Image 1 (cartoon, helix red, strand yellow):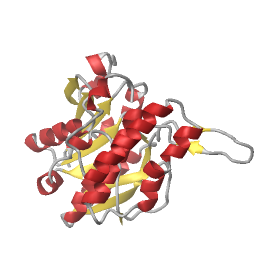
Image 2 (cartoon, helix red, strand yellow; image 1 turned 60 degrees about the horizontal axis):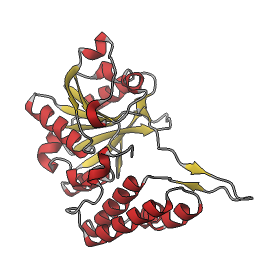
Image 3 (spheres, helix red, strand yellow; image 1 turned 90 degrees about the horizontal axis):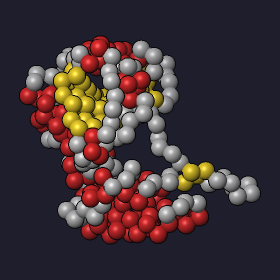
Length: 284
């Protein structure tokens, strides 16, 4: 195995600490900084710096372009696998080395992506097939990008991993969970409130994320008949107005973003991105 890692940054805080949990197992590190105006400042220890093959700084363009740049680099520079990471994720203990060693032993060509356990532990040793994945912690054989293509950059941020998983399945490929890999992944900043005996928890997404989540997941439900997740759409889209109105701030901006996202998603319209220009206006 010759493994390249890609990590996408956006106003990172614990990036170096998280990186230390997996950089030892990498043969190369591709850093893509989406922090507007390149105002991120970080210094890497010499051992980490020696792994860096490319650093990109510039305007925020989402994660699609970052993933595709790294995938293309891996294909052109002899890497056999690509690890995709979020800046807020880390591997527990020494589990990353166990994770990549288990993947290295696997020779099944139908296994087109590998995922770790997320925010939990298990005594399981065997791989098992799972239906989906998230970007952070996933390892792709570079042959996957030749067979299934690159990521859909029009998704920008959300559901890009879900769409790619659907394409893997359409290619007859499998996504395998490797239980020895244990990823700690931040799940955002939900908003919790208390009303008597009721303790509602809101996703509390910004207008930007609200737009992309509604648009992209509804697009998937329209374009991929096999994507049948009514409970997910209910949670991410249809019950959002209730939580926006009852718990969250910035109600009008979020409701507007939600309505635009719903309208474009139901029409299957990714071409007219109404929020891309806001990626560099504020933290998402």
